[in-house]
Length: 72
Image (cartoon, rainbow, N blue to C red; front, side, top):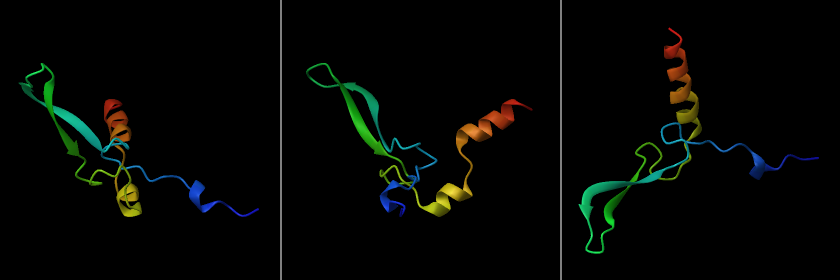
């Protein structure tokens, strides 16, 4: 049986954990009472949520580094 090339593991961006675009509030409100927000894309993956192999293998995930520092 041949492996399916589409089934390989996705390389998720280590900076945004696959959530590449977030809405940040400006603090002001629209005339209908809703808040004004700006969509901001992850600067590392440019809003795709995926990262090249060199980026994934050259950095440690943030959660792993936090766990090691907490044990000190």
